[in-house]
Image (tube, rainbow, N blue to C red; front, top):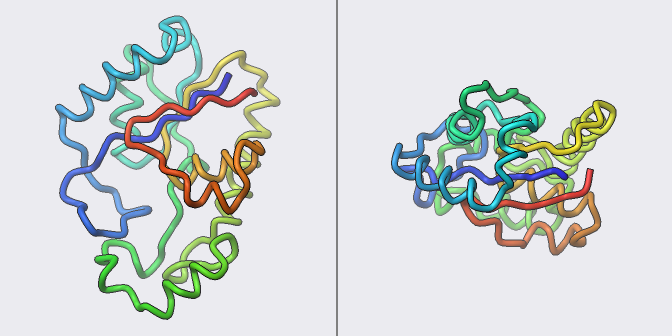
Length: 178
C-alpha cells in the first residue's frame, strides 16, 4: 500500500503561488498533523515502511516526525510543480491571459514558464516504477497537492480533468495499491 500525504498548511502564503517556493509550516501545525496521521496510518507501517519525502521543508519536516528515529528518503520526484516566474507572486498579480491559457490546457501548459502537469506525471510515473521494482509491501510519501492529483489521474481513480479540480486537503492521506 502506498500512503501519499499532503504536507500541513504553510504559514504566511495566503494568496501566493508557491509550488517550489520553500515555505515554512509552524511547529504546532506539524505536530498536530503528525498526531492526526498516526491515527490514520497503521503503526507498523510508520515503524517499518520506507518514508519518502519531497525535499521542501513543508514536507521534509513532517516526514522526519513520522520517520523518527529513522531519516526519511528525500526524492526530487515528489516535488511540487514548478511554477517558474509565477513562484512567490500573488495569484491576483498573474497575467489573466496566461491563467486563461493554463485553464485551456492544464496538462500541457507550463505556468510561468515552469513545469506542466504532464511533466509532473512523467516524474511521478518514473518514481513509482522504481518503487515497484524495489517491491516494498508499504510506503509512506509526504508530498504536495499537484503530485497527489497526478497520482489520482495516473491510477485511474479520477479522470485527468477531475483530478486537477479535486480538493486535496492539507495533512490528508491518499491510499494507492502498489
